Image (tube, rainbow over all chains, first blue to last red; front, side):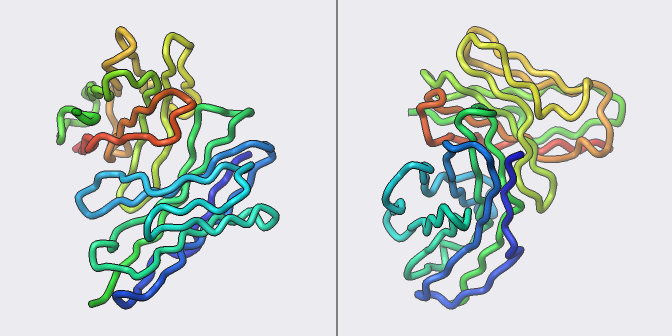
Length: 116
Length: 114
């Protein structure tokens, strides 16, 4: 069964520092996709980055990069040069492409707080 | 263009009443998802629609929950005989089918059952 684990309920980081948000997953499906979403206090869900299980390179989108370690089943989000506006909840999510292609499951989230 | 819209934004109802939540996806998006987010929790998948295919209802928590999508566009999530544990934010998202990696989320409907 697919499962997403985020072990950091909350993190505090100094502005301009880099931060890594942990995510591990479990799946028996050989093809899957991994996502990160940001949810500010306003409640909207904002797509950040996507990594396919067969992608050879780690995904990057501006200050966001995904540290994909397939053998360890981890998909950590790295935010470089953090900004005050990065304070939000961050969710890791996964979709299995074969066994349950429609369903995307989410982790419990990490609340990131950036200190000025 | 317009994003995903949901209505109402807030709904307070009495225990035992039925409620209907509406989602208008982005035009042209064939995939539509409903999720539930309880306070301080992650998103719980409820149901998925893709074009004219039979919906994936595997996430619906009980038979009090149902959803339909008319004309491949607007979707309505119905909760019958609401219970206090149904209180949550109900989020809708749409995407360009399975090939569309990114899901676009609506602002959600905050449901409070008293």
